[in-house]
Length: 311
Image (cartoon, rainbow, N blue to C red; front, top):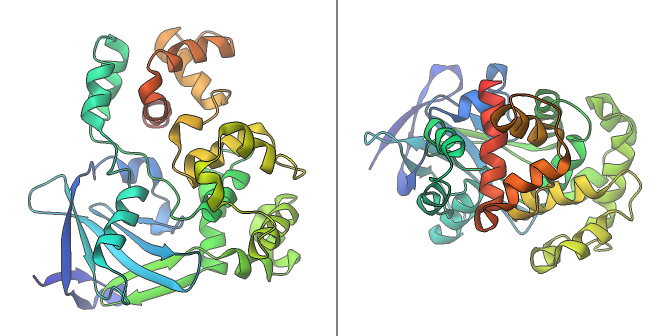
C-alpha cells in the first residue's frame, strides 16, 4: 500500500510499506507530550502521528518510522521506508515496547473498576499507554534531566540534546531524530553540554556516558536485575539518588512497577483525587498504589497523566 505524507517544505513523498500495530489514543498524546513547533523529545508528536527512530544495539542501526492513525480511527499503523536489513518483526517489537502496546489495558481497567475515582480516571484516559525510552541509555539520560525541574523544562532539555547531539534522519517523508549513543555523548565537550542548559548535570551525564561506552556500567544487564541491584549500581554516582534510579528502571528498562512512589507529582495527584487536595503523607500514596499491585506501574502512570491533563 502506498501512503502519502507531508514532508518539510510541503513536498509530498511516498512511504512504501505499513504494518498494523494496535489500539492507540492518538488524541491524548499531543496534549501530554507535544512541545511548540513539534520539537523532538526525541519522538515528534503530531496530531495524528508520532515520528521516531527505532534504534538497535545502541549502535548504528537506526530506522526512522512513523506511527499514525488509520481510517479505522484509534488503530495505530507502523509506516516505514527501509528496514536496513532488520527483520520487520524486530522493528515492530521495538516500537510496541516503546509505545506500551504490549500492555493489557483491559485487564488493568477491569481490576480497578470497583473504585469509582480510578474508574473515572481510566474513562477519561481510555486507551492511553505509557511511552518509554527506546534504549536504556536514553532512559537514564531522561531520568537525570528530569531531576528537580518541571516536566515542560525536562522535555525542552531532551529536545535540545536530541537535535544538537543526535542524528536527523529523513527518509521518504519520515523525518525523525535518533538519540545520541553513549559513545557520541562521551565525546562531547563538557562546555557544549552545559550550553544546552544542563548545568551541573552535564558533568554527570558525561561520566555516565563514558562508563557505559567502555562497559564499566552495563545498563542492559539491569533488565533482569532486582530493584536493589539497580539502585545500588546507579547511586554510586554522585548526583543519582533512589528517585532517579527507580525512574530510570521504569523508563529505560520498561519496568513500570519500579517507578518511585515518593514522587511529588504522584503525591499531588493522589491528594487531589482522594483527599480533596489536602496535604498527605507518602504512606497515603503507597496505600493507593499498593492496592493494585499487579498493575502498579500503569496505575502510577494514569494518576500522573490525569494530573498533567486536568490540574
